[in-house]
Length: 217
Image 1: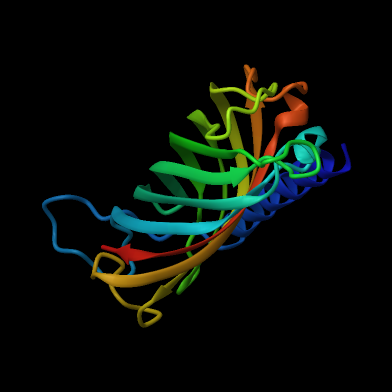
Image 2 (image 1 turned 180 degrees about the vertical axis):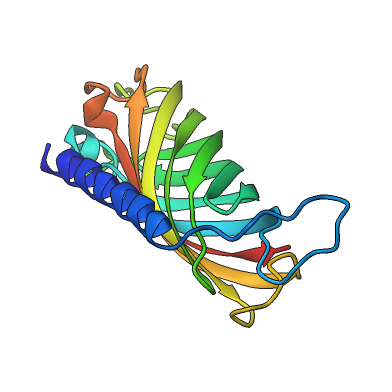
């Protein structure tokens, strides 16, 4: 319960903070197609990133499934200075907790995720808040013939998160010039329609922390 309230509170604070920061610094004017681009005008940008990190269960499911590897690839489109959208493949690999099931059972997740990002850029730094939806297919690899209550499932998730990207280019460079991006994010994933674990949907909620590496253009 404490982890859920903490995740929600931090997400709300970042969203409010991003909105206030955007108000404090007016967005640059948008570039008008068909006209010469002026210095300081904002143009739509794109990015592609690889992600890797850790995924775990902060609630009741923690005694059934341990933490494990999370990974993914994403593409993003930012038509506005204030934000854009991100589409990604998301995967994870973890195991059941040995204390509950022996031998442990490997669990794999594969899914897709669509996010809305509020991400005003300030020089090379781009802090953001994210929210969206995801579908994840869970596959339980039981090679030992162990009978248990964890099973294959399709999960619906609502990710809420915070992150920051750092654009490795000169501060006043054209954002459409190809450049390297490094970043990090933390997400709380609300899980719905859970038949995967013998706990309530809130008990099956997940958290992930990721580092990101990619290109912007």
